[in-house]
Length: 71
Image 1 (cartoon, rainbow, N blue to C red):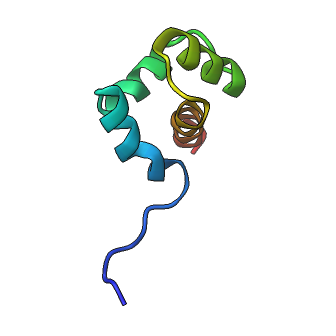
Image 2: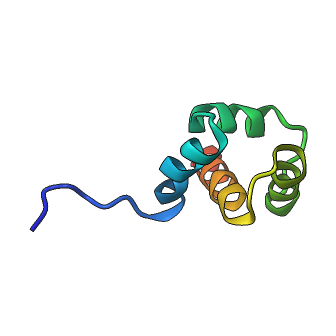
């Protein structure tokens, strides 16, 4: 049995997002926070169109951001 906990949920996408797009997750989170958009799907669409993110990666970033904001 491993002593490491497996990362679950949106954060499980973070290593591949950083590798594929060359920006740290903190930077993506700042971009989302600074956006005038507020809806989940409009933020996902914005990341896809403006930054070329795939749907799953954009969705993971937005879901994580909104969950942290709503705590």
